[in-house]
Image (tube, rainbow, N blue to C red; front, side):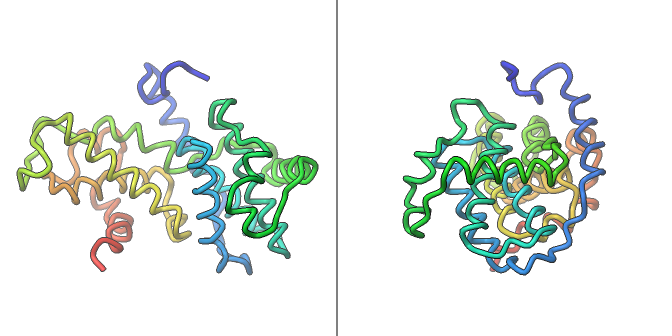
Length: 252
C-alpha cells in the first residue's frame, strides 16, 4: 500500500483518468433481483460491519457494489446464502481496498450482534467458497470504480479563497469550511449506498454531485467553481439531476 493517498500524489491526474476509463466499462445495473426489496437491510449490515471493523469508504462501497451486481445476475434463494454472500463481498472488498490488519476476522464477524441475532454462524469453508464464487463471477477483476474512489480527489478543489459565503455560518475560514464540507460530502456518499437509483449515473458523477450538494448546503457561491469543473470535467448542469436526488431527503 502506498504511504500517501493516490489523490495527493504526483500521478493523481493520471490515476483519475484511468478510473474514468474503467468506469465506462462497468456493467449496467438492471435491478432484476427478486431480493431487491431486501437490499436496504443487507446494505445496512455491510455498513455496520465495515464501521465495526473500521474499513475505509472505498472498501465499503466496493462491497455494496459486488453484492448488488451479484444479486442482479444470480439467484440467491435463502437468507443464509444472502448473508454469506454479503459478508464475503465485504471480506473481498476489504482485502482489495484496505490495510491487511483491517480485514475482518471470522471471530469478529460471528460475534457481531447483527449475525448472532439471526442465529447465523458462518464457517471459514463457507466464506472461502463464496469468495471464490464471487471472484469467478467478476472474472477475478475487483478494480471496479465506485463514487468513493473519486470523492477525495474532487474534495481537493472543493473550497476556494474566492468562495462567497451567503451566511457567516459555519465560518469564513477556508480550512474550517473545507472540513465541514468534507463531512457533508461523506454523508452524501453514504446516502448513495441506500438507493440503487444512483447506478444510473457514472460513479464520478455521483462523487462530484456529493461535493456540489455539500456546497449548496453550506450556501457557498458559486455552487460549482471553475476549479471543480476543471478537476472533474463536469459542469453543474451535468450534475444537477444527481444533486437533486441527493438533496431530496433533506427537504422532505
